[in-house]
Amino acid sequence: MANTTGQKFGGRTKGTSNKTTTELREKFSLLIENNFDKLQQDIDLLDPKDRIKTILELARFVVPTLKATELTTDSNKSFQPITITFVDSKNDSNK
Image (cartoon, rainbow, N blue to C red; front, side, top):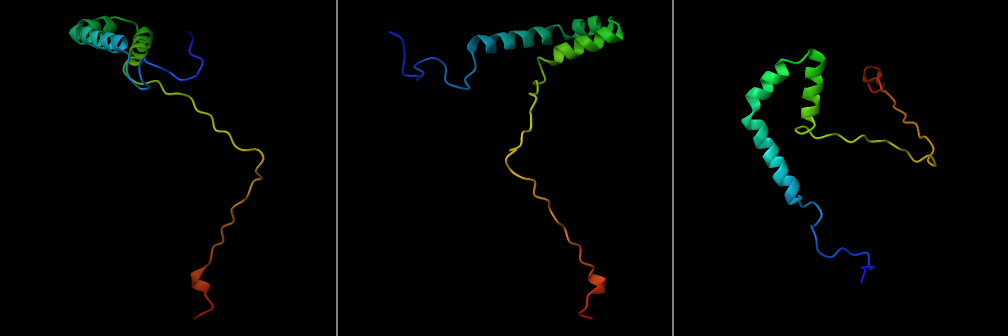
């Protein structure tokens, strides 16, 4: 019988890491740590263009990817200018 209530029953709760993904990331991290010197030697042998490309590709696994954002405004609201008035305290009439 299919669930037609729209509610989720069982499974991971929102925000809980997938065990397989977590394990895979740990193993990949260990692989990099154990082979760091060899990896650095291999990168050093590349042409500068390929070296940059490789570093950028590897950075995707370390540095989080930023999501592009878009700013939208409510077009129904009219523009309200802000008026700033400067008062010269030197020419104050209370002298």
